[in-house]
Image (cartoon, rainbow, N blue to C red; front, side, top):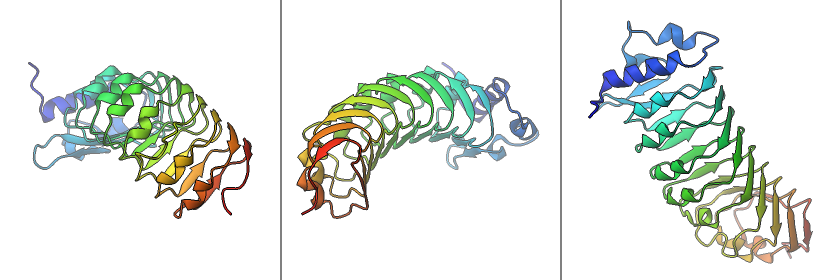
Length: 261
C-alpha cells in the first residue's frame, strides 16, 4: 500500500510541473526544493494534517494535458486550473479525490466526453467546466452529486437531453448550460425539487416543448434565461409568481402569451 504524506504530495506536484508547459516560468521559479511545498505559489496546506488541501493555478497560461499525478493529492479540497490552456481528456485519476468540494476548470481547451466518474465525487459543491470543448451528453451519474450547488457546463459542445435527474438535486443554486446543443424538453415537475435555485441559464440550445408550469416552485429564482431555443406553447402565468426574479429572457422561441397580467 502506498504511504501518502506531504512528501508524496510534493512529489505529485513536481511530476505535474514536469509534464506541462509553463511559458512564464511561474512554477519553475517558485516550486523548488529550497522552499516548503506549503509556501509554493498556488498551494495551500491544511493545519491539522499538513497535507495539500487546495491548488489554485488560475490565469498562469499553463499548457498541456492535465497530468494524472494530481490524483495522488488525496486530501485535496479545491482544484482550480481555470483560465489556462489545458487540453485533452480529464485523467481518471482525479476520480480518486473524494474530499474534493470545488472543481474549477473553466476557460481551457479540454475536450472529449465529460467523464461519468465525476458523479462519484459526492462532496463536490461547485463543478465549473464552462468554456471548453467537451462533447457528448451530460452524464446521468451527476444525480449522485447530492451536495452540488453550482453546475456550470456552458459554452461547450454538449448534445442530447439534459438528464431529468439533475433537476432533483435540491442543493443546486446555479445551473449554467447555455451555448451548447442540448435538445429535448424540460421535465413537467421542473423546480419541485429546486427550492434553492437562483440562476437557470439555458439560452442558445435546441431545447423544445413547453415551459413547465411548475417553474414557480423555484421560489428563489432570480435569473431565468431560456431564449434562443425552440420552446413552444403558452408562456405559463406561474412565471409571474417568481417574486425574486430580476432577469427574464424568453425571446427567439415559438412562445405565445404574456407571463404577467
